[in-house]
Structure formats: C-alpha cells, structure tokens
Image (cartoon, rainbow, N blue to C red; front, side, top):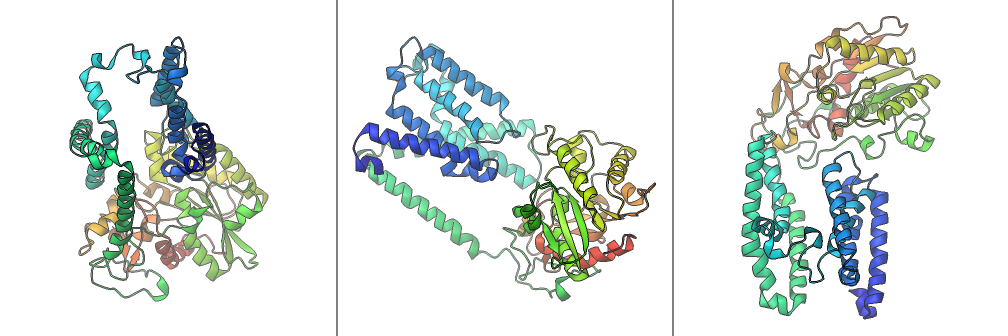
Length: 517
C-alpha cells in the first residue's frame, strides 16, 4: 500500500513486493532451525507465501502462459503438492526452504488454471461437473482450517488421552459442520455487507480495531484472575524443601511459580545441543556452581532430563565450592541404544556423533565427578518394545565403561505425568489431592533394577545411583511441595523446584557412596 502511494505503478509495486517476498523467504530459511515455533507462527517468516500469491496476481501467468503449457504447469503443481502431503512430517524443519515445494506447487496450479479462473485444466472439467462435495469443501476450506484444530485438540487436553479413530472421525465431521455454519452465517454476510463492499477501508479498519481489542483482552484478562486459592503456606527455611515432603491442602497464594507459565532451567535458553568440542564461549554459558576459580569440577551429561537438574547442582556447587559443566543434547540419551526421535519417530542420527564428541572431551579433561541422567521412560516408548532389564543395564554398563575412570553418579528418573501438573492444579485450586500420583505407580518401567544393579564392576572408581523417585515422592508423588511448584510440564522440574530440592539431592548424593567434591 505504501509503494502504491509513492508511485501508482504495477511494475513498481511488483518490484517492491518481490523484494519483500524474497527477504521473508530468506528470513524463514535462517530462523527455522534456530527458533522453529517463531518461524512457523511468525508473519515475517511466512509472509513470502502470501507474497508469492500476490506476485502471481500482479503478473497473471495464467493469462500470459501458452495454452499448451498450462496443463503441464498444473500437473507439476499437483505433483509438488501431493509430494508434500505424503512426505513432509515432523522430521522436516518447516517452514524453512522445504516450504517452497507446496507453496510453489499451489502457485503452479493457479498459473496453469483456466484464463477465467474457473478451475485447473489439469482436472479437465469445468466447475459445474465437479462433485458437489468437493465444491462445498473448497468453499468452507478456510472456516474448516480455523475450526479443525480446536475441535481435535480440546477433547484431547480435557481427557488427557488421545482420541480414538472413531472419535477423530467424529471431530472431523463436527469441524466440517461448524465450518459450514460459520461460512453461511459469518463469512458470507460479512463479505456481502454493503458497507464493506462499497467502502473496503471500513472492513480493514474493523479488522484492525478488532485485532487490537482482542490483543488487549488477552493481555489483561489473565492478570485479572489469580490461579491460586486464598490460602498461604509458610515458606521453607532457605527456600529448601525439607526431608518431610508434604503437599499443601490447596494451591497457596504464595506459590513459587505462575501456573500459566512455570519457570524452566535457564540452561534451556541457549545451552542445549552442545558438546565439549563446541567453542569456549558456548561452553562458558553452560558453566554453573562456584565459577570463581574453583579447582573441583562436576560434569552433568545427558538430555533435557539432565538439564532440569542443572539448577540443583548449581546450588550445591555454590555451597560446596565446585564448578558444574553441563553437556546436553535434547532427545539423545548418553548410552548407545537404538533410539528414535521422540517427536518424529525416525532415527535420530545426531545422537551418535554427539556421544563420541562428549566421551572424547571427558577423557581429554576428566572432571572430579560425572553426573548422568536421561529420560529413561521416554526412550522405552521410543524403542517400541521395552527391552529386558538385562539389556537395559547392559547399555548403562557400556556407557560407564566408556567414561573416564572417575566417580559416576547416575540419577534415575523423576515421575512422568499424564498431563502437566500445573494444568491440573489450575483446575483444582482448592484441593490438590487429584494432582498427585501413587508412589508405586509413577513409573512405566521397573527402575528398581537400576537402583540395585552392580554397575561398577571392573572399575577403580565407584558408581552410585540416586533415586529420582525418592527425591520428589514420599507416600505419594506430588506436583507441589509447600509453596514450591515442582513441575514445569509433564516430566521436567521447574527452575524453582530444582533449586529447592538441592539439600534433599545432596543428602542422597552423599548416601550413594559418591563423594561430593
């Protein structure tokens, strides 16, 4: 619009649009591997897809293209879109560069269409001969796009269970019904309203004002509601959870974290997916504990389930005078089991080179103690078939034999929840009892075998196991202890909770037979 104000020329506007489109695509390629959520939802990284359609409107290839080439353009576009439907999944970094395939495919379908924009010649039929259901689905497609996601997701979140096939089909049918109603009674009346069609600026102004009002409501409304009860509980001495682990009766007014946005370990903000071979500046950001020239050092290694323990070791290191160097890679266990990526279900090839670099770095400069932790239960699921206890322990022993001959402390899993405890607490402000687990039912596999296993055979240095279950459970496993919210999601501790567990962790560390530096 600004370009048109400067110079009312389609060539000038098209040139500006082309520059913006190319810049947006370049930004998408750069941002996607770094901040995938921002790249997916952000307008600056998705604007190029809208820009490509706008460029096609300014340079109508469907009118300039030879009738002989239109069917081929449409066929090529159909192939690109079909390839995207059956090939792109969670293992692809999207949008990124790969989004050009479905987007360009759609553009080619339009470019290969009939000069009157009736339909694609690749389908070799005018609109009136299409099956009516296809036309109806095309008409309501945008409403369907808006409806299908909440209709599919809200029941899943409410029940805590995935939908069955029949429930999914019912949800899809409901989405189509809602899309048809909103198309008929919202979209069409708005589009055909005289005030909007005769003076489009009114529609644009209405959209802008509505967006600003909604944004303001979303910013103000959460602050108007306190996700707590009216009770308070005494804070722990020194902020540390005592040996007698108890949950309050209700969510206290002085809870440590917001239930809407619980804290996470700071290490997740830029210190994951690192190995000892990364540059010194990156490693320095992963250093915690006593960083003022301490001679003693502890290496914390593993995946994100080691990362959520970093604040705990940081607290202990500051008190006891040792540094904590953390080496993490998300979704990669430290042992060499055939693990698939937890999100895509595909092999995770980055894990093996990361392990090799990690072990090489630890052998080159051995720390005083190595602390190991990983998502045991999640990797059992990823394997598809639960391995035997002997096979599991074999992987652990193989890892220990590959580590330098220094004391090793293995921290077993903390409980996994069916859904986020913070969500449960928000729904049960006056009675937190439903937001707990039986102590003997918090694990999907028998971790007792790991606790009692002889893992240090053939080593001069000892190997100990710290029971993560005992760290956060008593007669039951709680989501909250006193005023401390323990979990940020289904299986990670909050930063506040991890720090508040430092004294309990140190007591169990000392009892494991592994010396605290």
